[in-house]
Image (cartoon, rainbow, N blue to C red):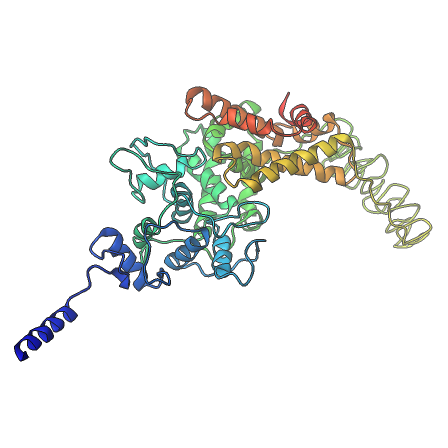
Length: 516
């Protein structure tokens, strides 16, 4: 009996010293010697994942959006809480803070109607999109062949993820893009980035992405001497701003560029405006196909701004010649010869900022007074003729059927996007984003009292390089892309989507913004 007892004790001691290879991270349902098990153990030891109340990990189960946020935040070190809240994520929800951090980091968005969908399962292609947003690898060509379906809004990011071996295809070429990703699959991917030396930063703003796109494009262009005089110093300016943006200490936006590079912008503008129209057209033709719509907007609204032309009857609406009158910026006086912005009034009247009046010919700001009248700051006095507190009446907003139809376009497209985060892919957004910006600007004009007519819209937004030509150019690019590559029918898809708008909204959209 003593001999049997000794054997049992000895066996127990041996077993107690053996590693539990069958239970990675203490989970009995995970094989520690497998690739998946090793990844789970690594994440468990780092505090990234936990098991369930039954003591198991359940690697085969799907991953919810909230669970994914928690894992991503811990692996990549995101900690800054955002300000946006979601209707379906109460403050008491276990993942509320993780979701707020994720939204602020920019790698995940809501699902529409003010909701986040915290308990929704994630698909493999959705995870590709989010990881590419975070890691931001340089685009390289994927030479493999995916044999099963991938959503068109995800295909580019799926190929990028495959090209960098973030994911791999199965032996038969399948990726299972639209299937729910499992906890085990995500663990394998994320374990590679745990304590990685790969720098992970908050995704670039749209503005920074735009200037990076411009820098890349100018670095590959074949330029004439005239183009080099404009684009080389512009690229130098862009590269300096990009370096500052990548440091992450200063927010690089339009105001930063205007303030920091004012001298450079002036020289670039002078070089650009000294080019002939033929050279400008040729340069634009080279640039347009190789930059995004957002980059084009930044380029032509911030850097390459065309100088306002002078013509006939004066400046902003009067005078003898443009902004000058008879002599440069003087004419008879002030900014505009005999007229400022209006007939005999403008900013000067007959003599600088005084003449017979203050800011306006015979009528200061209103009546015979202005800031000076015939003398000093009084005359009859005050800034108004009879009542110094007489404010001008508020403008009457335009609420015509046209404006109501434009409001309907904006509302319906916005609702579509809220209901389906992936409704428009990156190609289609080159049309939708500038179109929505233009529509909202027109609505702002209407709210300010401007009468919205077709002639007004075409004149105010249809100028060369303006919002409407930008939208039309993007539409043409989509159409040409579909003709040359039938696997990218984005033009047809976009027309179908816009065709779902109410008929009156569609009519105004086409007549005022899309058709010649």
